[in-house]
Image 1 (cartoon, one colour):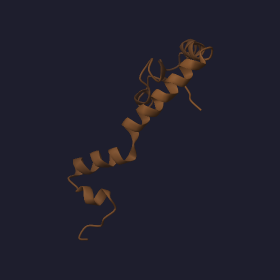
Image 2 (tube, one colour):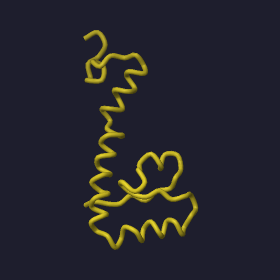
Image 3 (cartoon, one colour):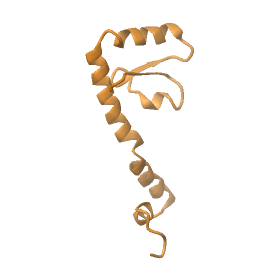
Image 4 (cartoon, helix red, strand yellow):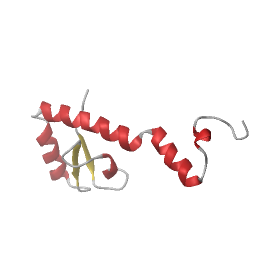
Length: 90
């Protein structure tokens, strides 16, 4: 099941949506903008499907745990072998 994301332009939320690609961003506490965003997608099931597929791609690219681990280990100066579950000294 696909879904159009509608979120606020607030830290932690805004990173999940590329406005107009996989959903819509609205200003915090703007009920009219929220209703308008909902109104844009509800009558367009093809838009919901398209944005749902885009959301999956965005999530896989930005939030894949393996990619995040790689960045963390690189920043910490740790080796890839630790990422694979191997213990130091093995």
